[in-house]
Length: 213
Image 1 (tube, rainbow, N blue to C red):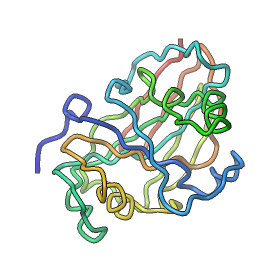
Image 2: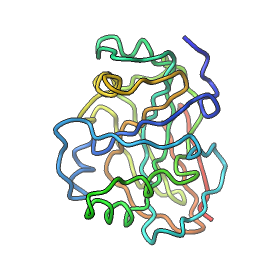
Image 3: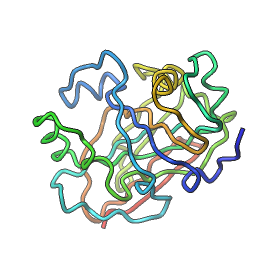
């Protein structure tokens, strides 16, 4: 398995999963998908801890979404759920920043969400954590804005767990070493504004922080 500790520089893409927690689906009034809902972010969306995110000029409703990131360790093509985790090198905590109003407009027009999700620095991430240190089916995710807890969830509440997601994705999309899969966000998403300090963490394991400017 390749060394992908520096996945930010090594990866080729981020494959992201939407609507993977029932309470998050409910809070936004969306329908539960019959299969995993996928979209992509480019590697230019990465922002390492301590960085600054410019409030996008295209939005008036800028949202945070904390997620578990899965770091791919070896090439994955048509893997089974049973073997999927053997290809995982590690995990990280990530924030899927979203221009919510732009996303809603795209949904109404039935066009892709790309602009709302894939802008520069739209994915603050924490450090690489070896796979042996995390149970992807029972990991707590927390996000704080200015020290106040806004999101607190657990990956055990995913509709599609990590092995099933990897099986579904790799049936048609090859994952390469250093690629990251964002696995969806729990409920509690909300807006951030200029001046906000945001911290996302897997408590006791890893964290990332950024400032909105």
